[in-house]
Length: 226
Ligand SMILES: Nc1ncnc2c1ncn2[C@@H]1O[C@H](COP(=O)(O)OP(=O)(O)OP(=O)(O)O)[C@@H](O)[C@H]1O
Ligand SMILES: [Mg+2]
Image 1 (cartoon, helix red, strand yellow):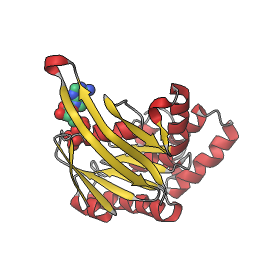
Image 2 (tube, protein in one colour):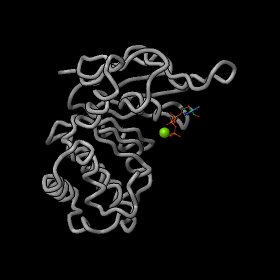
Image 3 (cartoon, helix red, strand yellow):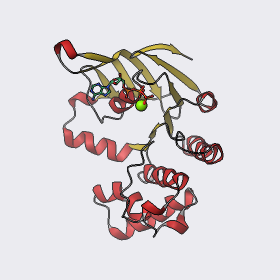
Image 4 (cartoon, protein in one colour):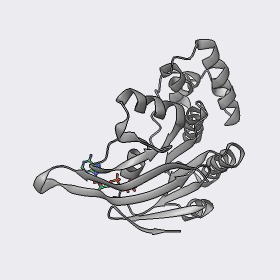
């Protein structure tokens, strides 16, 4: 299987000198295309930090993130933005939707950033909203959606660029169990049908066990992989 993301002694230290705090310590990972991986660990163990580094949203203190065999360190900011925009989808617990924009406008934002025409944006936006069963809400303001609908809108937005990998940080954390189940099913469906790699931070054992692989983080170190 092809590696999609590799890390080499990935380390993140927040702060300086006496206040320096090692949030991630020498993490080595090899993530293959099409895998589903759960990142598990206590609050404060470094899961979100790891996710942000892998998604090129933050830079490491030392070590490297290699995406499709390219050391991300060597990329210009512009290339990095492009890579993220074209290959990654994000589903975070805090939705990061613009509340007073329409659902459709929220969902097509990555396309707008990529300079895709308005008509194409609308076509693709409606397609992904259809996929998460939210097409009937396309014109509603995001603020008026329920929590589960907001989460589905985020998944639609994550899908808009046909990503090769979806990063999900506690995607079901704020949802009731039935809605959470629906979101989970949707993510695994995408994994199966489109071979989208899933990297999911979760405290939910059932969700973690549904993933092919589990990565356990403790105090910034990878303590177990299975
Ligand atoms: N910008 C920052 N500056 C200083 N310390 C930080 C910063 N961001 C995170 N940390 C610290 O790094 C550690 C790891 O944080 P991180 O957000 O990765 O934890 P987490 O495993 O995602 O926890 P949770 O399950 O609560 O979301 C924590 O101790 C946190 O306080
Ligand atoms: Mg976190």
